[in-house]
Length: 173
Image (cartoon, rainbow, N blue to C red; front, side):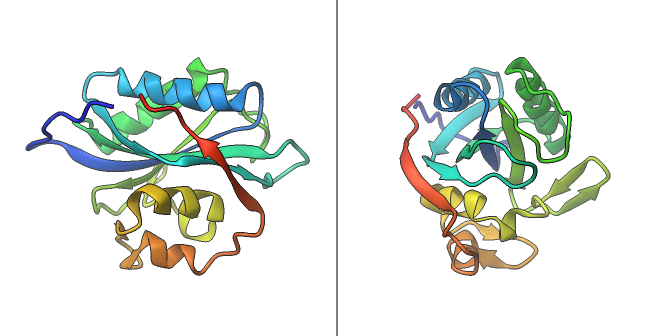
């Protein structure tokens, strides 16, 4: 992973990745590489994989990870890129919390708080989800979630981690 000097105009971002259809490990790795190859996005860190019991209708367990990025994009532009990347990897939204080839969630964007119909930062449910907080704590434990004012590592201590299991690392890009 190449980390160019990040200067003015760059934003620190955290995203969550998940997949439970197809070769989930390859999909998550390819999705991160796709994002890192885009102008204005630099992959800074990636977490290990976690296998998680799926929320919602009966379906296979989900492979989850988190990544931190630097970007020149605005929150709305980045969300658009994430949604287009999901589609590129075969994401079809048929039912709420259904099985998916790729799920990309924008978790944090600097210390912004945004509440719009199609964009909420910080992600509204991240503080309740071990499958988000555990991988995020692996790469950004000290990042302070701006609504609670608490570090990711502290938020992780408050959730049940019994249904997640660390299973491996993403390959370096």
